[in-house]
Image (cartoon, rainbow, N blue to C red; front, side):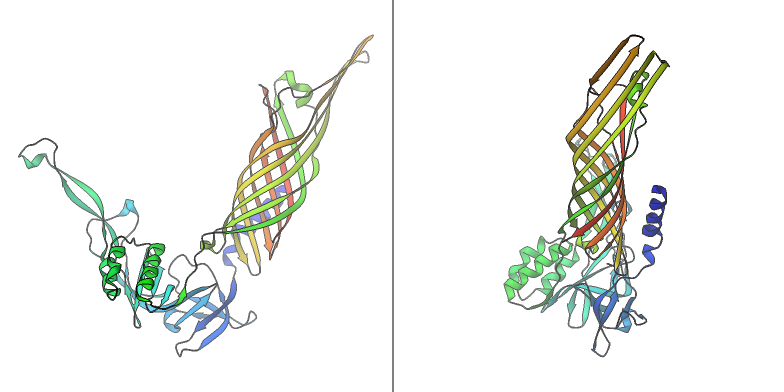
Length: 431
């Protein structure tokens, strides 16, 4: 059953997810200036998007739009404008940088994402080389803000004072073409006080936005749209379900009475609270899922050594542990229409708040009989650590998840190892 469920959720998550649609309320701005309200297939585009899909109603057939077919569109509080723009195609990756500051300019059609709209406007998009490009708007034209990282050779003077220049060596350093700073001086020419702020600005979205905010204070310009780019959002929830726990003890022959006791699987109740941190830059697809979980298990076993009716040893073992666990996981979810499927994995650490560690030994050697009671495991740890992986589905605020957890159990005794294997079926609700 466990293998079937893992296979099912794996196929669901990685096989069919990427072919699904995710239509959210949005609009399309036609070339005539009309606004068509409806639904757009939202993908949290990480690079240049060449087409978008639009429906007036969810039951309609989808219409495909390229950048030159419409003026723009909006979805999920994001606004885009169609444009024919210049784009700089040099690589940004340090290991692949090239010598020289010369630009590699190409023309492209794109949907530019609006960061700020107003008297002065800022836009950006990621080209096919995965390089983020920023633009300012002048009337109806978009001007590329020029920036390039590149390599340059310099002469490294020898520390020994000699006249023989052959003892000098070349070295390669990373430089930046920051022509965008000069472009901003012209763009904000009506506010000379901006120059010192411009000179210290980096080619990064949050830095450029701060520069625009400073210009607003300086010039009293207007803003009609300001993109809100929250990094994360905290969500709270509760969950409960059933756990199936298997305890596996292994060790030397000295511990046969507890390692070969034949423990059956323990079926128990589990519940907890969830604190999810959604990283909104990826439309909440990636999140950090933190849980406080109550879980418990109880197993019993027996190991008999019988030589005759007058000579035998019966060993009964009872082990029961209750834990408060802290689970820290990374979660990825993907839309399937109105449903989200997700997968998560992470680490778990639990503190034992309840313990039953009991062993009873009944011996008979002809006329001598004895009963001994005590701890089954002489050295037992309070803290259990491990890792878990899970798959599930979420509809609105409700979720269902299948999860497997492996822990290091409770033993610290030399030559005695323990592994706990828990299977959870959990139902959750997020507020």
